[in-house]
Length: 114
Length: 114
Image (tube, rainbow over all chains, first blue to last red; front, side, top):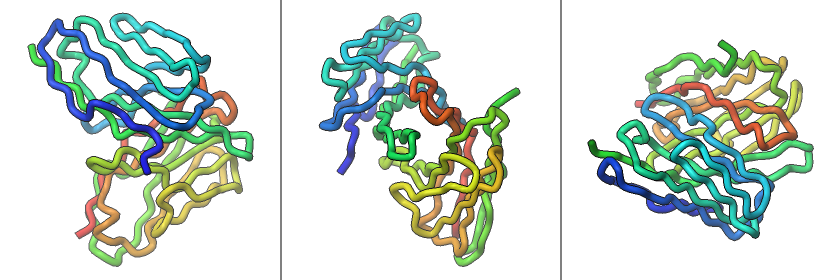
């Protein structure tokens, strides 16, 4: 059973269009992180949202954490070819050892066509 | 530059061979983990460590061993490689109790078992 459902799995859009990626779960997370991964490289952290209802903006990217801390969305305005990549959401759950583990969604592969 | 270093970048093994994937970080992070990334499966946790001398299993630990003798290093051992272990392996580290800082990933090891 996939703990985090990410959709869509693939997205191909024209430069200048807007898009939204969704990350949903039945579990409550301590925080939700979004990563971007380029071919041949490891994921790179974009943002962490911690508080239910929190909205964070990173230039043309807007991240929102659901009120119940079970879901999140990533909205990109006026997409550019440089936004092409694999976008991963990850939910943080604290373990008994005082640390936390990340559970990842399967990712959204975004292609922005010039 | 501070970060997570993985070696080798690429490796081809024959079924039954053993090898060690190396991971080192210079950020004094207590938490380190190993993930494998397969098409359509996302990132899955193999093993993790919350500090030197402490390791635990993740979602898919079978066929892999780890140890953590120092804060900096967290090697992953394949004792008898199988074709099902063909994958891209990522090592990640983070401060242990602050999920807002996210994980720092290495650039990965692409392993093929023939």
